[in-house]
Length: 135
Image 1 (cartoon, rainbow, N blue to C red):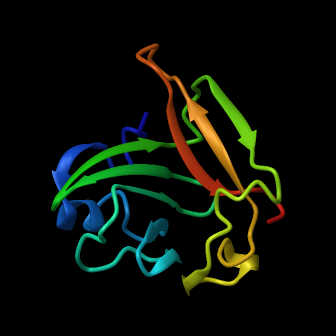
Image 2 (image 1 turned 30 degrees about the vertical axis):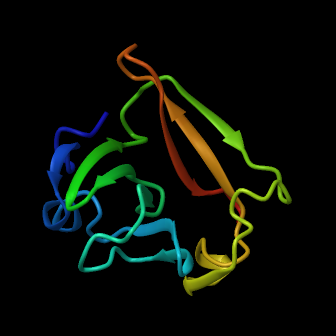
């Protein structure tokens, strides 16, 4: 799913994920402090799933197991079967109090999000999250 020239996915340490696929991106995750929409923290947050995006380019889905990250990367410029699923404005999936991060205009507090479902190789879909266009 990743561009040959872009960061790849797979199993890696948190430090490798921050230096690679998460580098320069905006991350979204939920933990006991609330919803975070900001750059990747220096150490792995206490969450199991984290999503990230870089403007209109790379999308990242990361599952954490301690300091080990399982990373999927999608480059929208690479042709792959994609389905976009908008989230209803008041469906509650990201209605938690955003305590850290960006304003709505930059994809943070109060922004609308959408799911991007990719099934590039027929092995099953991977879901990414990003701000919806115009959010």
